[in-house]
Image (cartoon, rainbow, N blue to C red; front, side, top):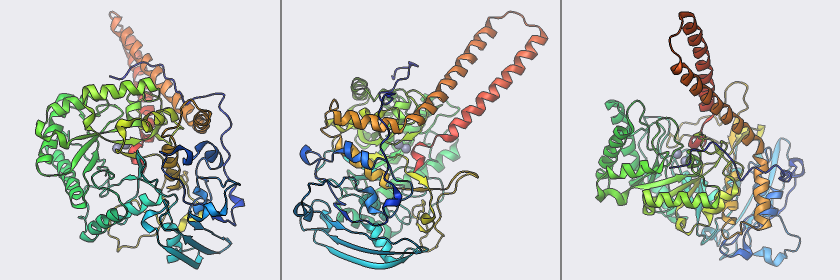
Length: 570
Ligand SMILES: [Zn+2]
Ligand SMILES: [Zn+2]
């Protein structure tokens, strides 16, 4: 069980941390000449590894106004003065000239030498694109520019890091979107995650998905981890709702098998009004039925943050669930550790000792053979807060050290490691013409206007910026083999911690307020129970106060929950 201590500390918090790294000035980027867009050999060879400290200083977080459509903005490596043109020759070349007024004139030359590690699938291609682009609508050429990956996938890397990418307008688009950020694994929704009714998987989409996975060497048995619907609760007590949940779940499993995908991640569900043992036995029954109705897919249960009656906050719950499922099905059941969720549930994944004891508990209670995937997210809220608030890597309460532990654990080699970190940023005018649609498998004949995500009145519209993931994948891969005591690591850790300082302070304060309110409630309850006979007046006063207090508590609680997005942030 995770420690229940209320002393919340974070290795990421450092008051003496250096200044936040500077962001590049967007006004200086009207003309660019970008070499070495693609970079990086295997991090197994340290000498060639991406040196994150200096690099992140140059481009720490997405530039808020300039990044979209701009490959240069996500160039993770600073051009080193000493790099000879000969050395550059082996890298793909991209040069972009922009004259931004009402029109953009763009010339792109992409040359990839045969055998280059940067883009193995297109190793012998030479593409030249020239065209005029109107601001209002994207042209073919502009779309082609977008196709140029933000970073190349690292070859022969031990850890398969990727992100939960968009599958808008067809599941096959997820493959392209993963390639775009240099992911060696990826997650996706197989259908709309917030709707019960969905059109069936189209045959062409299925074939295209399989073809693209083959082409780009994504192994459906290892590298792809779809995420289940948020509506599904297999532990549901209500018979009709349970049937609806089961049908939607089974439909997803069938989609996996059609697409050649082995792993399927889903939330264990919630006990709601019923007891945990009852809920676990309903979940076990549904899972057993689903396993019997399918043949190859492996349902993977995600660790949760332990809020309310949610199942999966604590590792022994998975042990208890497995005990209720016939043994012959066990090889087809997996568990996915969501770092943010397990930390919020109370497990210390930050310190090397805490991480080791978490893994030991996993091994002892469940067995490492069940560990099939990870969701890599930092946490905006403190350990034990039971809040599902994903933060960018290194900026939350987990801190970079937690991810160093993971990236250097040989037991996790080859598992899909999926980023579900926030990538939304405020929309700019340029974004008006962008095509962001978050609904997968929708009728693609229907031309919907492209708009940034709608937000409540007063809030700025947001658009997703996948270059954040491109950078985080590079960052995580750079941690492989890095000495955690080196100045390189310490500087990087402090920089990222500084970036998230304000957000952490806000959530630390919220958490402490919540704890204080709970403590007060407990004390007044105890005092009330200790009192003897009460006068009528006294009772009325007390109940009035209590009601006020309760309302206040409920308000702040629901406010907090509204903010919790977790996996839903993508
Ligand atoms: Zn997750
Ligand atoms: Zn999830």
